[in-house]
Every structure is written in C-alpha cells, then in structure tokens.
Amino acid sequence: MKRIKAACICQTLHFMLKEDIGHDYAVSLVKQEVEQYKRTLERNHTQYKILEETDQPDGSIMLKVIKQYNSSPVGNYLD
Image 1 (cartoon, rainbow, N blue to C red):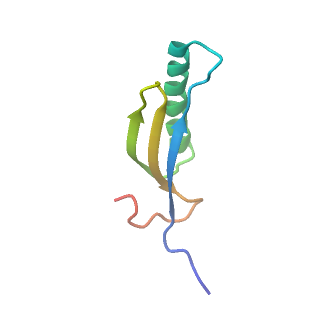
Image 2: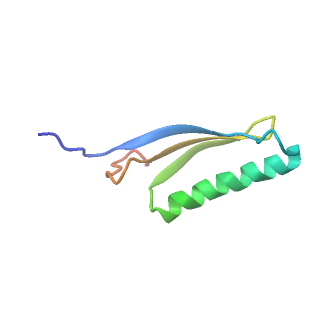
Image 3: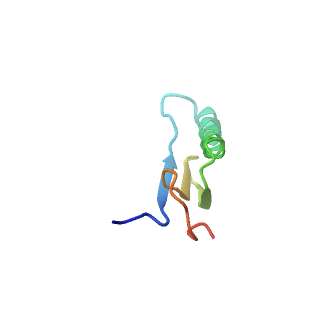
C-alpha cells in the first residue's frame, strides 16, 4: 500500500492580454486577474509560494508558483 506523504504542483502561468480592447485597459485587467488568482488561493486556504512574478514587455504577466496539490500535505516543498 502506498501513501502520499507530501505533494505540490509547480506551475508557470501566463496571464495574457485580451486583444479586442485597448492596451492600457487590457494591462489593468491582467493585473486584476493576477490579484484575483492570489485571493482565490488564500480564500481556498491553498498553501503556495510565488517563485517569480515577471511583467512581460507586452504588459502580460508570467507567474511561477508552487502550490499545494489537492489537500495533500506539502512537506518541506514550500520552505
């Protein structure tokens, strides 16, 4: 029998600009979307660690995150 002792998932998320609206407004929407993503992690009590948040030249945002997988314990992945 096997048991999961610790589990996390590493993701690179690209929050891209919408193309059918003005550039400045699209950039502000992307920033709001990133903040909403972070609030959702907090609200769901998901343990996470943001490794990198990078603004791209076009105004989009790349986010590298390690987060809890399902409700598994995270062990020392987030240390």
